[in-house]
Length: 119
Image (cartoon, rainbow, N blue to C red):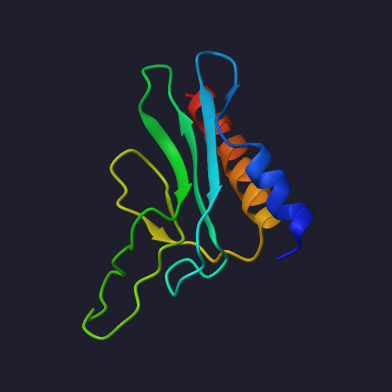
């Protein structure tokens, strides 16, 4: 991953960005030692919150996610994942690079906000 991409993501650490109508997002990102679970060396949590503070969308790599319908023994569970709603325990997300992560997150933020505002 290119250094300027890493720097851009890391520079956004602790940013809270207003999305109007009480919705807001938070970006957290910091460097960690690369490992088999986090080979890119970046721990991140990007979240969109409703006016009541509940997370309604999130991309993170804080924990492994179980893949439905699969047996888990001996299998590497993905750490990069996204939560598509409040109760979602996470679905795998394919991390390519920091810019793609930000692009994917903001695209989904726009989609979720469009959906909740149309109700």
